[in-house]
Image (cartoon, rainbow, N blue to C red; front, side, top):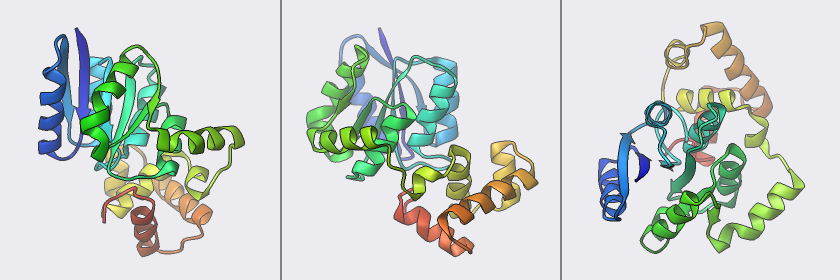
Length: 210
C-alpha cells in the first residue's frame, strides 16, 4: 500500500486529487492539509510515501513545507503542485528537497506519471523546466528571493497575509524580538522599507496570492 498526503487550501482540489489517487489500486490518502503548518504536521505524523503540496498556501509556501519535511529527515517524496508556470519556482522547489514540480494545468496528463516516478524515488519534472533547472543548479546563481533564509521568507509571507508581528511570533513560536529581527533582515536584503512594499514583493514572487 502506498500512502499519500495532499496539501491544498482548496477543498475541491483536494477532493479531485484524492479521487484520482484512490482510484489506483494499492494507493491510499492518509492525510489532508489546508495550510502549510498542517502539511508539515501531517507528514511528520503519518509519514506518507508521497506528499502532493500546493505551492501557494496560507502560513507557509509549499517550498517551505518541503524544506521542513527534509529537516525532519523523512523519506517522504514531495511533489510541488502549482498554477504558476515558473522556472524560478521549480528551481526553488528542487533546492528545498522536492523531487517533482507539476503545473495544475498538466495534472490530467502528468500527475500519475509524476507520482509513479516518486514512488520509485526518481525525480520528475516537465521538459519545459529541464534546461532551466539544470542551468540553475549548476551555476548556483542567487536572486533576491534566494538570499532570504527560509525563516525570513515565512515571516515575509505571514506579514503579507496580514498578520501582526505578535501573531507571526505566536504562529512560529518565536519571541517578538526575533520576529522583528527576521522581518528587518528581509527588508534590508530586499531593499524594501515598508509593509506595503513587502506585500507587493510577496505578491510578485507568489509567496501569496493577489
